[in-house]
Image (cartoon, rainbow over all chains, first blue to last red; front, side, top):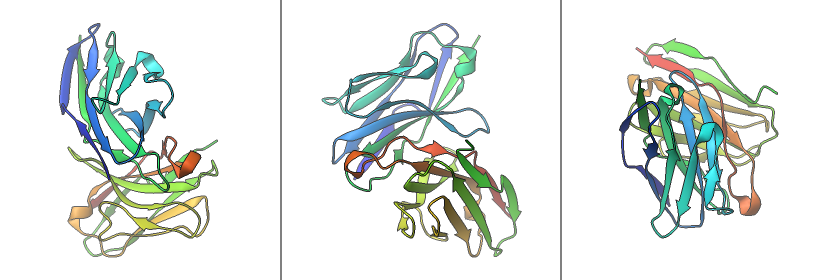
Length: 114
Length: 116
């Protein structure tokens, strides 16, 4: 079984300040981990993925995430927020075993103020 | 490439009516999924398929049925719609990676369903 906990339902930052969105996971098997972004009334877009290669993963739009096995965490960061980053972000886990499915966290809404 | 296409994009149903949502992908993916998205709940898996002719239940399957007669299509049916099924529905597909594990999923644009 697998599960994902996104520790904050809402995060507010000012434009130009760092972003930290927190995600903890549990998985019976070695996991693949993903971050998706959803802008209002839009579909889901992949930001980045971890699939057991480098533990620091770089994604699109300046985002990155670090896989920490000892802490079962996969936090998403960005050095400097932009107004266009305002959206909902989902952390997703999938165990690396046969016929596994994707389990989503409940999402974190990122609010960016000028 | 079109990627993952869902039809329709919007629909209003009366309680008790039936409907089918169609998902089509042109990436030759083995895995396909139906999720529903509700405020504060994230995306919850309804049903999924690991290949043509196969289906399996997800986290919230009650009130829904699915079929995958062709590899590229995955249909979600509501036999007797209820107001609790008001939601945004997303279809997704993915490759089968090494050891049968998932690669990233590609999502359709969603179907907004309202049951009155």
